[in-house]
Length: 117
Image (cartoon, rainbow, N blue to C red; front, side):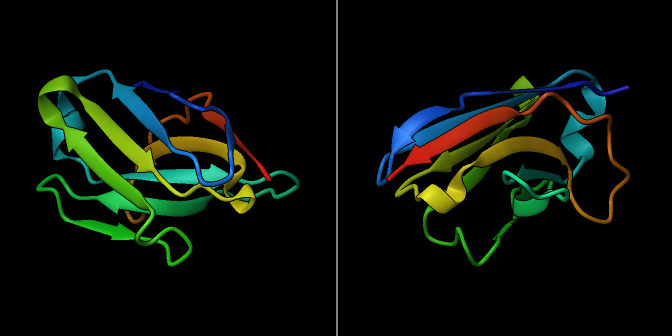
């Protein structure tokens, strides 16, 4: 079973940047399309922010297009999310997991991102 550990969150001012990392255990990681999701305060559902296929094809939510970049290093079993030009609306707990349409792994603890205005 793949275990996911997110890191890299923190408190940043609007306009700032953060880089999130998601480390996955298990050698099967490299064959999975992966995504970054977020759960905003007061919301029950997680929304997809960005996704990347095993071959590196990416797609993004409209709200982050042009500001966020997802990438992966299969040799390190790690997925990254570079977040630039952060806005208060980006405040959320960020999680990684398999992309939509793919059977999900157990969710990790996530990493808190707080953007102050």
